[in-house]
Length: 547
Image (cartoon, rainbow, N blue to C red):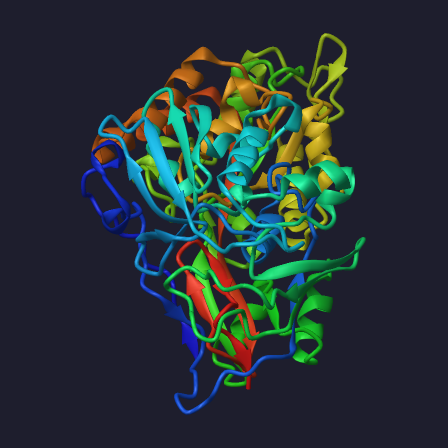
């Protein structure tokens, strides 16, 4: 049985943040009802026990919620930590660490009543002080928060009103703040553990979630153990009995696609994202549950604009015309995805429908002509363009992912057809991030997943150059202004209009070659019961058990 998830996300166009009051009526800009994975026997009784083994490619950089830049880690932290609020299956913001909240009429002051009885994995209680510590840590430049820093937006100060009441102020309205407060990167941390564990905290963080980190075997697996004391699940999850049913969740790194699928079919793992080549034979296979959804994000080849020749916008735009994206989609994901035309995918709110027509078309002759106009010619007839004695040759960093590898080879061949040499250097994810931060790269293949177009802040804002995931290392006041206006716009139509213009502007700057977005297919063992899929694209294990 396959549960399809291909429709675009709906929008609830009620009053936005500044006009919203307390808990019950706050709704996300995205919503999707609960998506059951497979069929659950209505007569079955949930039982505690078992080990769920999830196949993963890489395990990420660090389990410190505030310091990670890894989508895989952010998913793992969904089960290890708790954020201030949660989002249910219908897109409503619901209690988590906070049991209720109020927002000032101007949308600048947020006050949260913290739930009594929550404890960290080490048994220490959670109060407003720990919440304040966590948000102050994200704001502290010394933390070098990667994703988390972008999630708090224009937060200026925090305060403990009383032992169980926390408050923060914004310098201006921040449209996606409620969505971002549900993110695992803003999990509440134990100050005692942070201060006593040092770097070890990133290997075994002490949070408040459904599961506790038991062990991280480098390059092999991360093992989570059930938190038997967890009795504060959000209301859309089961309340009685408390705590999760599955005893252990193991995220096992299997880098090669074929090996991961073989392990799944052999019953050695219970969940695996399928490589495109294997999707057709799983689609009608009754032996597994299959779920599919569209990526909220894209894969791209981004140019470092501080490096020659990518400091020339005409050169960058020429390379955009040199790539036949359909060939890339076919090679990377066997057609289970689509061509990307801007920095957003069709599954993301704010995507501008006109982007496909606005973006440059595949035209290698036009690319050659543009490069010649910029001074790049094949003066010695060796098939490689040169200028002022320098060959047009650069190195693109890439990740150890089969689909990325196939895509890079296609792009490499297409660039070679117009006289440009692209070398490919494959590195681990954490190393790629470090090289990008240090601006050591010429270009980089990178994908992202993000639930809001404010990902533009992380990707393009000047403050993220040399610090975050500003892949281009660009510092552009026009870009910064677009991003700031998009963050502050609480009128939904006005906000989407800003992001439409931003998509066009980024295209005009030739910052990257948008390549593809994925249609992900995830296979699950049929022994799993009670699984649901959340609209933010992760599996809910809390209500699941093994039959």
